[in-house]
Amino acid sequence: MSNVPYRQTPLGVRVLLTLLFLTIAGIAQLRIADQQSATQIHQSLQNSLTTFAVARTLNGVISVAQGTELAIEPAGVGISLAVGEVLDPINDLIERFSWVMLASSTSLGIQALVLEFSGAKVIGVLLTLISLLMAGYLWLPAKTGTTPRLLLSRALILLCFIRFSVIAVVLMNHQLSAAFLNNKIVESTEILQQTTARIEKLEARSS
Image (cartoon, rainbow, N blue to C red; front, side):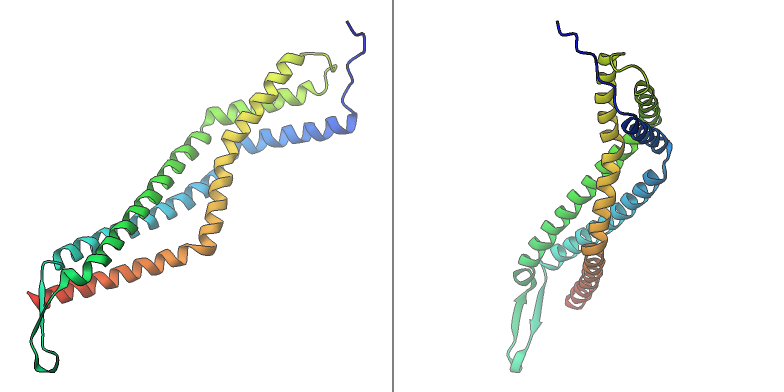
C-alpha cells in the first residue's frame, strides 16, 4: 500500500470554494428569482390560453358558417356561393394552430409545477445544509471523511441542478419570447378576434 500522504487543497482555493459554498447556501434561501420566474410563467400561460380560446372560438364560428350559402349577383348574374368551400382550408389551419397553443399551454403548466417543486422549502434546506457541510470539510485534513465528502459533492450537484436549472430555463425562455414571440402572439390574437367578428357579421347577413 502506498504511503504517499493526502495533498491538502491550497489555502487560496479553499477560501474561494468556501465563499462559493456560502453563496450557494445563501441563494438557496432566496426566492426572488422564483417569484420572478413564476410571474413570467403565469403571464405566458395566460397569453397562451387566451390565444387558444380565441382560436377555438373562431374555429367554432367558422364551422357554423360553413353550412351557409351566399347569394351574389356579379354583373347581374345570380351566383350561389357555398361558404364552406372557401373557409374549409382556413378552418383546418386555425384548428391546427389552436392545438399548437394548447401544447404550449400544457408545457408552461408543467414548467410551473416543476418550478414549484424546485422551490420547495425542503430543497432549499437540504441545499443550504450540504453547502455548509462542504465548506466545513474544506478546513479538515484532506484524508478526513473522503467518502462522505464525495457523496455530499454529488448530492450538492444534483440539488443545484434541481434548484436552479428550471429557473434558468424559464428566464431564458422569457427573454427569447419577449424578443421574438410575445408581440406576434398578441398580433395573432387580435387578428383572430377581428376575423371572428367579421365571420359572425357575414353569417348574420346570410341568415
